[in-house]
Structures are given as structure tokens and as C-alpha cells.
Image (tube, rainbow, N blue to C red; front, side, top):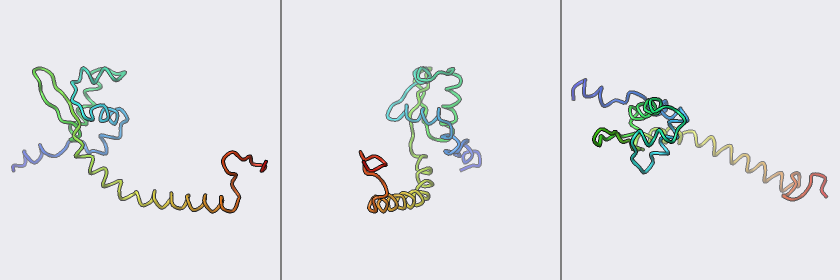
Length: 127
């Protein structure tokens, strides 16, 4: 593989940068399971077709979208494979969430067992 081919296969944007924008996350959800042209996609957003195209380009450059030419039209579809990188990164931090949730569960169960917290439907004064 030549240096030129290798450079062409490296994404221009990374997945984390690409999904940082809420519009781009919304675009990924919109294109999940379907292929759409930019004209249809832009109808879902209160911005210009040019602005939507810029978002699509960033997602495509990150490898999250595939484009296919059909006549003069370019159609986009989700390619979820690069999201595995994000999943692996988040998996590392799940242990912190799990630990915090376990600690919260123990705290709530201990306070409820001791009668410190009112049960659902009870008032604070115990009436």
C-alpha cells in the first residue's frame, strides 16, 4: 500500500469529534437502517442544505456514513462499525458508573431499612 493509499484510508475526522455535535448525532439516528439523499435529510432540519451537507461530510470523513451515487444524487447511510471505538472507550468508564450506582443503592436501602426515608405515599411528618 502506498503512502497515498494509506492516507486515503485514514479518517479525516475522528469519531469522537464527529459525534460531539448534537445535529450529527441526530443525523446518525435518522440514517439508522435507511439510505437517504441530502434533499430528504435536509427536510428534517431547520438549516440550509449546505449546512446539512457539511455535517454529512464530517460524519462521512469519520467513517460513520457511507455515500453512494445514484444518478446525480448522493445517498447516505449509517456505517456503525466506527462506533465500536467509542463503545470500547466508554466500557472502560462503566466501572465507575456501576460503582456509584451500587453505592447509591446501598445508601438508599440502608436508609429505607432504618426508616429514615418516607415510603412512597407517606408524608415527611409521618402522617
